[in-house]
Image (cartoon, rainbow, N blue to C red; front, side):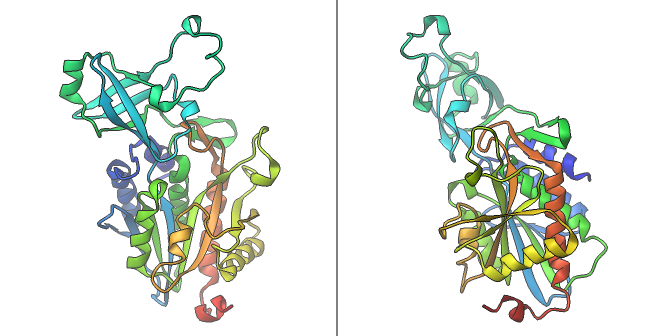
Length: 349
């Protein structure tokens, strides 16, 4: 399957944190068709194994869950009150079309008062999520037949292609990196490698990385690398907090990262002419699956690669396909670079 088509298909699927089944099914099927041994563990992680010579284990972790909404009350007038699962940017919610995943899919809109009827002092204020309502068009009785408190809500959004081979849509954080793993797998298709490679699409990262905790414990990798999105530069953002979209993978360094794993990726990029960027984290809490992989069992030599992404935690996230391709190349180059090496020596501090 073409990597772009794979990315767009999984981003269109539903997969809010804790409810990833629809996205997980598509991911499991794609990796199985590409030749991996696939399984789903008790927390819903999709684990795809490409066997090597079995000398050691390298695991990549990319979370497949997305931020979303949840029904918390059905109003007597037929409106739905909701809250969030994960960190939604509430500024982006007004005027959105949504899907309530009830007994059947129910479509609705998040409305707002007309500007003509809004007091002038309120027009410049942001609306709190607690004051927003979803209108489905149903009255109370019919709505209660289809929707319950606790039902999941997602933004109704189809992934689209922009100019410059850019893809935009919801859930590219972090299914863009699931697509990177798929690209890496395709690169390794006709090659033998010393390492057994695990591609793990994790659950619940947006609410605490529970999926990565149990997956890393179960796999017990020698090297564990989290793949997540990074803040791509837009005009209003400070250059010191951002990376460049289209300029390659962001190789992270800092307390959450094993310095030799950082060197493995940096050297692989240099030796193979693969574009890359470097970012420094000054704490041990990267806010990604890397933070829990690092301290799994007796500790794992951890790494973190960033995929440049615009408009994070909105329904119009943007990623450049050249970054997806180059990140997959970097991962496969690092894997092949371990052939014939003493891994303990490679990781010795």
